[in-house]
Length: 173
Image (cartoon, rainbow, N blue to C red; front, side, top):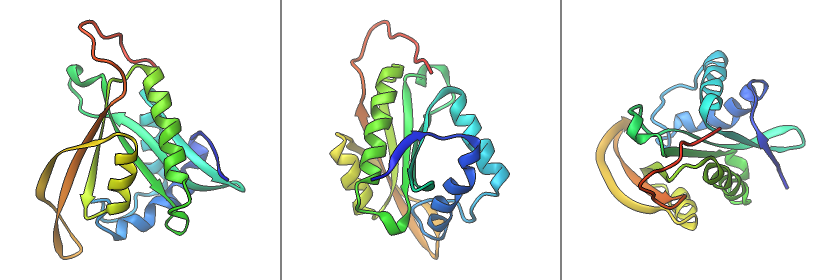
C-alpha cells in the first residue's frame, strides 16, 4: 500500500511522471506536459494556500491529489477545486480513493465549504470516484475543449465539505 504525504518541490519530477501520460489524452486539456520548473512553480503556488498530497510506493510517486482556488474573486474563497491523478499502471488499486479521503479530511479541517471538480467526458472511472465521495453532477459544458481531433464535454461536480454559515470562518492553511 502507498504512503500518503504532503508534496514538496522535490517531488515535482515524480508528479510530472504521473501527469505527463495524461497530456496525450483528453483527460487534461493540456497538450504537452509542463517543463519541470513549471511543475515546481505549480506545486509552490498551490502550497501557499491549499494542499497537495502524493501517494508514494517504494519512494516512487504513484499518484497525487490537490485542492486549489476555484476562482480568484474573494467571495469564492470558501470553495476549492480538486484534482486527482494516479499512475496509469496503478489505476483501480484504491490510490485515488485514499488520496481523496486524505484530501477531503484536510480541506474540511481547513474550513472549506464546497469542493468542485471538472471531468472530461467520457471518463467513467473518474465519475465513479467522485460519486463515491458524494459529488453530484451540477452541469455539463458541451464541446468546450478540442483535443486529439475531437470536441469534448466537461461535467461539473460539487460536494459540500462543511455546513453553510451566515458568518463563515476564513479557510486556513
